[in-house]
Image (cartoon, rainbow, N blue to C red; front, side, top):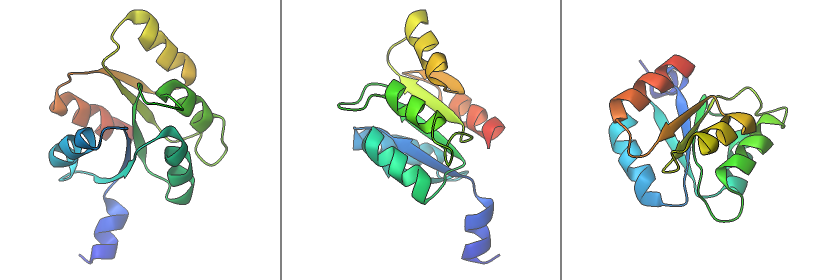
Length: 127
C-alpha cells in the first residue's frame, strides 16, 4: 500500500490543546490507529479544521482566549466543520461542565485523567 493510500484510509484526528505535552501523550497512544495533527488554540483549530478537514477533533476545554466550549460552538455553527465529531477533554468533571459541553455541541465529553483505551474506543466509533 502506498503512503497516499495509507493516509487516505487512516482517520485524521485534530488535537486541540494549549499544552503541547498533552498532544505528545495522545500522539504516543493513538498514532498507530490515527493520523494526528495539532492546534494550540481554538482559533487555530477552526482554521486547521477548514483547511485540512479532520475525521474527529479532540478538544481541550480549558484554554486561554477561545475556550473549548466557544470553539465547539464555532465548529458546530460553521458549515465546513459542523459535521466533524468533537470529543471534549477536560479536568472539569461536574455535571454542569459536562452539560455545558453537550450544549456547546460536543459529541462526547471525557474527564481527565482518562483511560487511553476508552478514548481510543470512543474515537473508533466516531470516525
